[in-house]
Length: 185
Image 1: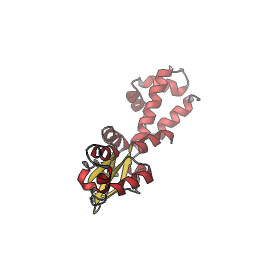
Image 2: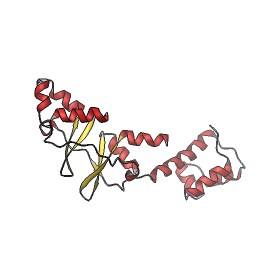
Image 3: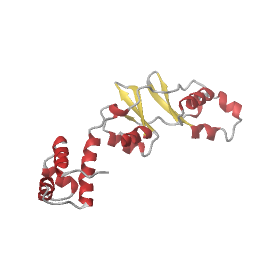
């Protein structure tokens, strides 16, 4: 890994629309230190450089919205379908939870855990033919496509997925995996 040069740091700061004062405040250092680093007059400590780069990364993430990472190919089931049908869909797409949608509106969610729990006191054949609506849980929380990724990340700390609503209709989904993919981009 190559450390950025003073010119590269200055270019990155200006590309992100930051003044030296803005960068200094966000990084917890002084503005004169930023000026000296950019001028090449001082070699910053590695910890200072890390703070500056973290600020750059945070600002870049702020510009990413849910609409940029959401899956528009929403895989869902209806509450009237059988558990068996849901299991086949979950296996086919290798997913562990699925939204329950009726007429474009989220009415619940179904997860592997819910299905397994229902099997503890019922025979497999009985559970297989049950309706999803009989065991489904609460709906996933919802966000607008114009919500920043940071907000979605906070919601995903407590939920396996977040549904995206446009004009009252579910149009997409964001999962923890979608957030993790940002690290490799």
